[in-house]
Amino acid sequence: MFFITNRIHLQKLQHQALLVLLIVNFIQLSINMPMVIHFLRLGRISPETSTYCKLWMYVEFTLDCASVLLTAIMSIQRHILVFHANTLRIRFNKYIYYYLPLLLGITYPMIFYLATVVFYPCDDTQWNFTLNMCGDTTCFFSNDQILATFDWIVNTGLPVVVIIIGNATLIIRVIRQKLRRQQSVSWVKQRRMTLQLLSISCLYLITWSPTVVTSVIQQFEPSNYVYEIQEDYISDLTYLISFLLPWLCIGLISNFEKWLLKQIRRIKRPPNTIGVGTMT
Image (cartoon, rainbow, N blue to C red; front, side, top):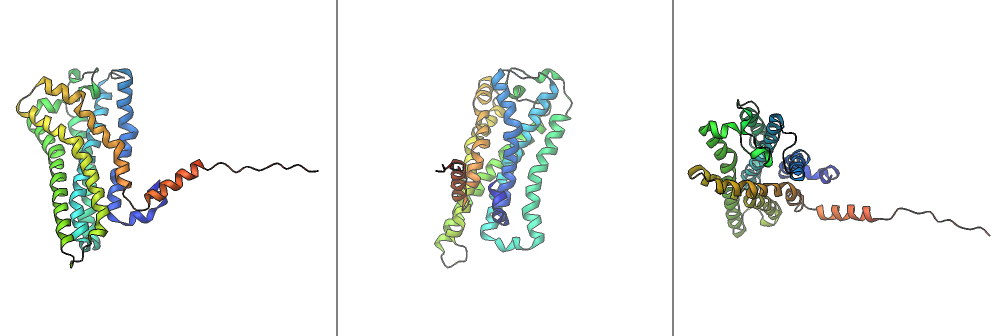
């Protein structure tokens, strides 16, 4: 609603990427979270079918991957927006360096998990209808070690590393730029954009780092104990992204607080009443 009523903010490229990330987050809240809540309410998977499990895993894996990939892409693009903004003024460069990566961040997970989850040949014995997301396992995890390793490195581990390095170097470059006052880039102008990305990135790091660490442990020393901890506790951390991301995305946008307070006052405002007078 904020971007619809304040379209002037969408003229800034960094806000366009945030809008894409918010749309992915909205789909997670609208489709994926109801499945999780339905499981938690019943304590089991319902309906207990392979089709439902594949659908759930496809939605979960695709949206999680798209979300972390978009954040990693935004972490890289912020360097261009802050220090090489003139590069994106050329239309061709804008499509190649800005819009194309965002498009790939959405379409790649859709295609990859369509092939590895939906169409990958396997039987129905893999599903556990008493665990969240049917046991959070797919055939290619156990049947194809190369594909499973590729999925873990490219779709989870690498984006988290990019977020860490991208934002660490961004902080260093911004501080160095702040010390060089004679240069054109102003810390004051870039502070809000930098804090916004850092807040979002910290959220992803807090929620995804435990998953990455336990996944590394499982790769070298498989353990049922670590698997149970990951399934019962650690994997649920990623759900925090869906609830906190919208506030981190738009909370640091200028004029958002004024817009939010205006909407609250409009809701609290009592309806107009027409007094009834008496004639004498």
